[in-house]
Amino acid sequence: MEDKISRRDLNRRLRQSVNVPPTARRDFLKLFGGVAALAMAGPLLPRHAFAQEAQMPEFETIPDAWKGSGEVVVVTWGGIGTEMQRKAWFEPFEKLCGIKVVEAIGPDPAKLKAMVDTKTVAWDVCQIGRGAMIELMKQGDYLAPIDYSIVEDGVTADYRSEHGLDIVPYSQNIAYRSDVFPEGPTNWVDFFDQERFPGGRTMPIATKGNIPELVGALLADGVDPKDVYPIDIDRAIKKLYEIKPAVVKWWESGAQPMQMLIDNETPIATAWNGRVKAAKDEGHPLELVWNGGMVLNNAWLIPNGAPNLSNAQKFVAFSSSAIAQARYSTLLPYGYTNVDSAKYLSPEILKHLPTSPENYSVMVPYRHEWWAENRPEVIEKFNQMMLS
Image (cartoon, rainbow, N blue to C red):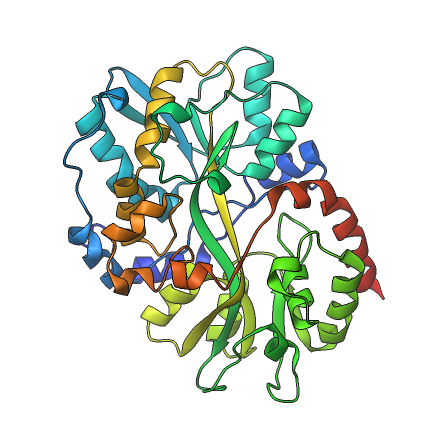
């Protein structure tokens, strides 16, 4: 890997990469009226991060239920995320299970819907999001149920739904320049405290598939994390009014807050955990605050009418196994949805993952169902705040 990707190229891709909703963004927003669930194309890591590759855990045996023949078409986001999925999942799946992985890029829910409608399904497994799953199933029988009889028990109930299995958790957190604020901030109350922590802020806009900081606003307003959902939209927007004058930019892509932090355009931001680690590994004086962060994830979805349905189920089970998930977390700072993965990961790796027990315990999981139902109202009231 180090021979193929230079440090300069990795740094360039770090700057240019953009997190997107689970689509061709425009098509998805047209199809679902803005009710986008997040997925990620993945932050790029500096060269030395790939040195961890040799530490990936290996499979000793696999269940016969995962073995087969033929192929499976797996649709992912491309970029460094797919490159590492190839090493963590695709290559061992081919070797151990006997099924060839045919890679495709761009898991667009609108295209999936059209293929099912016209009975021309060419995909077997898609990396999209539970929000897309919810919207698709509202409109028809577009997804096949996941066969949980061959999925490891370590994939717990909160990561299972009938038509999707969650994968690749990441988080949206407070990030700050440690050379400006050596002692913090440490929570959302601090983020909103412009006297103790002066300077501009940057936060996500509500549109274009982004998740505005309603959770952070409520935590800053004194709401207990366990009581954040169902979100009191009016209370959260009212709190955002307080910080609005300090927000120098409401960002639309994950690259924007990182560049603003690196350029010291703002000392505090909302950002994604993998990008912050990548920039910190490059030597930038940045820190991440796990406390009060939001845990999000993608999901494996299987289109109804998938031509290789059995192989799709086997791939979903294999890639969600404890060892497979740990392999991916070893390569990139994304979490796991199989709780047994933790025992295959070193403390040094675990401390950078949103799903490590210590980090996960102080964060707020994203509620896909709530956002799918309430996102139009969130966008309307957020835009009213922006125009006021």
